[in-house]
Amino acid sequence: MKQSTFVTIVVSTAIVVGIIVWWFILGSPANFFDGANRMKPNNLMGMMFTGGYIVPVLIALSIMVITFIIERTLSLKKAQGRGSLATFLKNVQKNLVDGNIEAAMKECEKQRGSMANILRAGLDRYNTLAKESKAMEAEKQMSEVQRAIEEATALEMPLLEKNLIILSTIASIATMLGLLGTVIGMIRAFQALARAGAPDAIALSIGISEALVNTALGIFAAIIGIVSYNFFVNKVDTFTYMIDEASFDMIQTLKVKQ
Image (cartoon, rainbow, N blue to C red):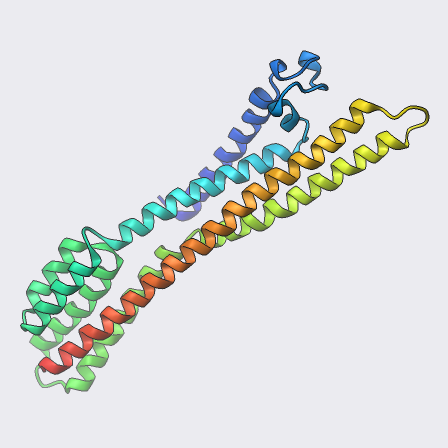
């Protein structure tokens, strides 16, 4: 499935679910003293419904954050390949020290994952050059291997980093929408106070509820988005560092064996 298609499906589904949750679950007449009028909430869900039209958007953003967290977790797990990375790297290094390039490539095929793909690209180029260009200088040969590794890394990195910017964007949008809902709620509350005669208690309470509910939902979505974004960025940086170290060790070992 293409990235744009996946994002479109997630966003569309989240918006639909957000509206359904807001209107049919939070807005259920059972959550209000006045039933279908939906003006006097009798529990927390009813209070959340009175948060207004921004609430379903914030619910949708929360659903998006959770969905992309699951997607990133599964993608990074897949990128690590099968089994332990430490064991995989140890086996590859051992085969390279023994001069068994084919065995090292088979280890990459068994492990799969981003690191295995990158190392295999370098080993494949080295194997090809060793068979076809025996007269090639060692330095030039290693340069070609390094370029193959860099090309493979450039292909794998977008897969590791995709959707991270979406998490960051959702966190920012959720904060701004929560603040917008807070401002709208306070405006309604002050309008209720400013009316001639006795203040409208129901309108006042709805305005305050709208302000507080939107603030809470906005902060909730923002916290999850920011924490998850920083977590996955750190995971990707650590994984990238491991790839660089493994590639460097592989090239140094191949140089020694020439």
